[in-house]
Image (cartoon, rainbow, N blue to C red):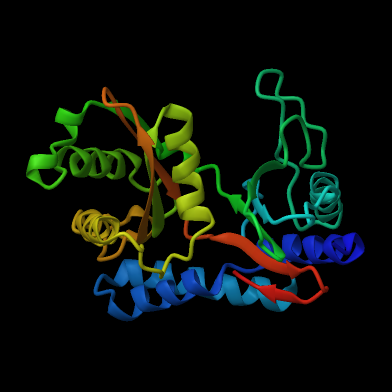
Length: 294
């Protein structure tokens, strides 16, 4: 793989991710405004969309908070991007220096701030090996951390999920999480739900489900597609609305990912993502061609 080409593409994706939101989420925002009946919510949504246009036209960050950076990199045989971690770190530091990102990454205990949005474990990188894949997929997401305050995790038993009642236990848990979160996740939000594995697996699945997938796609698994649509509608029926001030749309999308688990447990993680869907994706082919993914 051409490492110089990859470096440039990664840097450009980082800047794009903090100055724009992905097109799929932007369309969902516009659709929400078009059908919103609550005047306060209409005003909130209109202001959010205006903010997007200003940020793009002035090449400014969409939000004052840089969020937390996570990347997903899938690669095939012979094209592992060995320079990825170093180049992403450099791009974050450079974007911070240029004013695109506020320095907000700190030590979890001392709260010491290095001032460049780098540190132990940052950037968080998930590598995925796909045999025979002739390209490298790179997705970076800057997920807002106010939204993290509403996240919820529970280790269910099979009985508690209530499979016999259309997963009533799962539905109740998601609705309770949305009610408890209220306006903290900066709605309208997206919800990622990870189910299965152990606690760490469910948490990881919930993050990738809402950060690395398109919010307007349809799950291949019919059961997951059904649950995603139903849960989105259930959450919207709460009437929390944009910014949590009341209205028709508080949830733009629900995305679910699963992993096999042990017979004794059914871990579930609910992960909120604010409307500022700062993520960018690129596909770099072995021959040098680059495609935009998000």
